[in-house]
Image (spheres, rainbow, N blue to C red):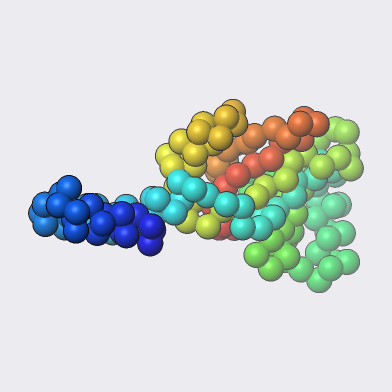
Length: 149
């Protein structure tokens, strides 16, 4: 951002742009700051791990009892709340398999992240729920989503 402002000022000082163009450029820069930061997104944390389990209720009870934590049910899954991160339990076979890892992104902007992934040469598909899935070289789905529970 500092470099962009510096370049705008340099162009103005070198009479390559008018004062009106400088003010318009600075106003546009200020208006798009949130989108610009989202466009160059960076993973902030592991938002959750999704684990396939053989019995959703039995697994939810185990995690709640063993780790003394809250487990919330939603959309056929249960989420084990561990601070800002969590474990999503999903009934599926084979049990005991990590289904996917979700990476949280601050200031998540779907359009900006989509464009940034495309610019990075990464193919993404819409995730069930929120965000996108990309696939690592070994085939593990990685979900990219906002840092909200």
